[in-house]
Image (tube, rainbow, N blue to C red; front, side):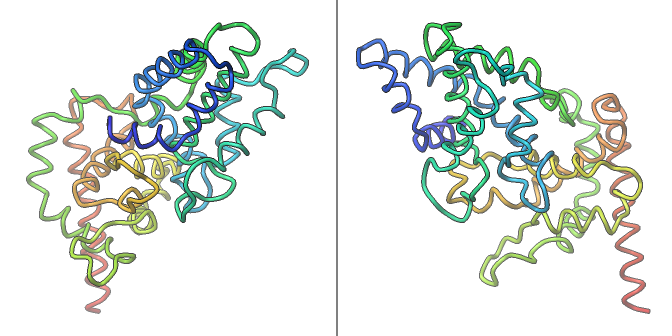
Length: 306
């Protein structure tokens, strides 16, 4: 986590942004303290970013935050001030912050126009905090402004902070572990069928793309039975391990088999009622989902033979 934070922070313009607010030693100290605050909240920021990027994304673009997701976050968390607030953060100012942030950092296939990457989202948070709380004299430093925006607005009011979130004491239990180990051959077989489509021929370890993850849900009629499409998207991105550099590491766009198993368990929990359904019977829910996958594969094999 520390390595990914340092990489993200190094690609932002935060240090320069704070330096523009003054030219004395206090501003240098403020930058260091602001960085410490961002590091403290980095895990939460990362998950909030994933939830909004995937949950309110469109098509297969679930790894970056578009304008719809950006404004949804700002409105939900009451970040934008009402029109007429002197020096505050209105919609026009928020839009400008988005435009500036999307142009920060290295260019590449994973840094697309009209979206924010993970590190650009962090950059935008600092700009919004300065505009909303420091420039209006609500806070006397950037560090205080950033802490207030994150703790009071984003973490305090976001409706997605706990979306399809599980607790370690429930997911990582002996019951679930036994079910997963018992069904690993089946899970591996399912993964093999729904992976590798976008891997290169010389790539030994095949991975599952979001397209293939969606095909599994479609083929097994999970979405037809009422499983939320938004949850399917969020589970995919939240099941992946954090990579150090999202701009260079393409593994951040696909699942390995371990992450797939993680996603299956999470899917079972959501199918059982989301957070309210996360009880001691999660192992039973995982087993039911695996049985459903197996039934689909058997039917598919029969059709091929027929």
